[in-house]
Length: 127
Image (cartoon, rainbow, N blue to C red; front, side, top):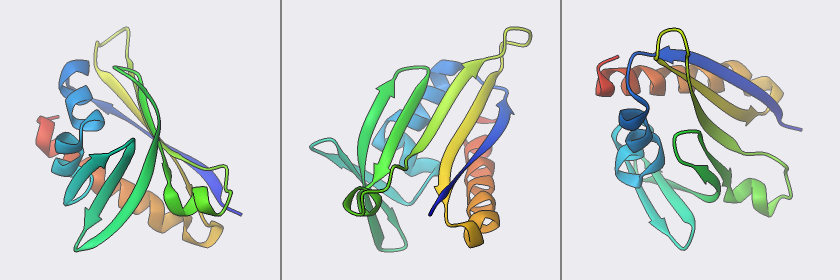
């Protein structure tokens, strides 16, 4: 059974800049993986010639985008990965919250992978 985890980071950027990087195939392809293509509500994420398919479950501009891996969908798992944003009212910076699911024995590796992706995102947006 997969378990949910969350990672939260503060980014010094505008919501507009961040939205373009988390909600479009081109933006996601700049930091999340090597390439992203979208067809019929499905996103195809590529890493080193390995492709994973995910269904776009929800997109609320400037708030969140949520996907479900096709493999989890096929196995009937109630899982997803989500990238949510919220404006910090004191600083006007963006709080980025990643929600994902991992096998219990792979939790640290999953968090480390997200941490590496967030480092790429920070470099990309200059945060």
